[in-house]
Length: 463
Image 1 (cartoon, rainbow, N blue to C red):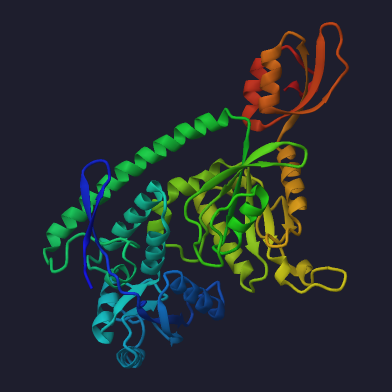
Image 2: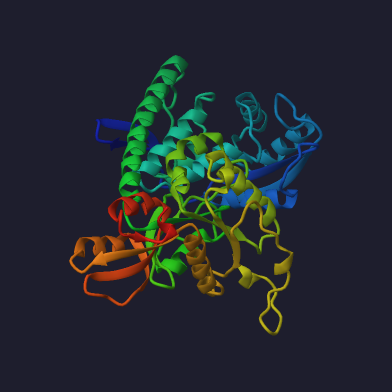
């Protein structure tokens, strides 16, 4: 086995990533602990929480040796769970040669260190595990920067090499932390870590500025934006692929998509929109990640319509939808119902159907929040996708205004503007001077339309 440090040139000099390359093929042996704290008021059933945490662990391709729920009467300041449970877990860790213990809770640094001392295994809490998944999945330069910033902010209070086991297993996945093996100079570590955080924040600020410029250009473009959001593994990327014919990575796996992808989508009457696929949400999404990914998530704020994808075949879909709406609310995307939301009830092919193809139980599902419409679909079979496209078109039309404007035959540039920035509904018979067009104009183009065609707009809709 050989350990090697990787060096990355990020455009401003070489940065040592302190990432290990290891050629072992055996996955890390892992134990999962899901605390069920009495009186904590969980929104998800313990069975759903247990299954989701196993899915999170499987997302980093480890060997799950044991996975169990631990009943907790009260949270212990030193170890989170009781001493008896710690002793039992420690014995199992030793007997089954567990290298890494994953705990479905937000552990304080002292609790993490005490559990490591008592069990003899490396310990990661829920936040650490999600950060590790994101570290492995980030593909674009922006995504890498966002994840590394989240890692380092999480690491500030810990300053230990929390991901060593996983880095050694996967090689290029994840992120290493400041200070090489054996370093104990905490002040030096803190200084290096803070310097790196400052550098990442500056680079991400440049990303935000670039996005702001892009949004300005996009507002002048003819296409409206439709954003897909939803709980992780709800099927957003599958729907994206089914609607656009794209080949975005889609897998039955938590956080299969991290980086935003945009494709043009044509609606039934020829109208083009831009469809955006975004990162999936999850319960108790780490605050470090929300902060780091805010530039990406803010794309949802610029959308003309939000498609909230729900996996209605999952018994926990209502609680999952509540989590998604909470994140959208934190972003300000649902304030005053300003952005229409269409609920997309995905995976209806997994529900029971009768002989006539009617889906059982679909009437019992309730839309959550202020919803413009809801459409049952299956990304796998294509069921309901045509209705979804028609619904998108209908809801977009409700936010637009209809005008009648007369163009002279010589106004070729104005005619081109209309075809590029509005929807032509009908045209009257031309006369000697010109022709009257009935057009539908999106809110983002209303001011430009009224300024360009002032004096040529007919009827009361000119306001």
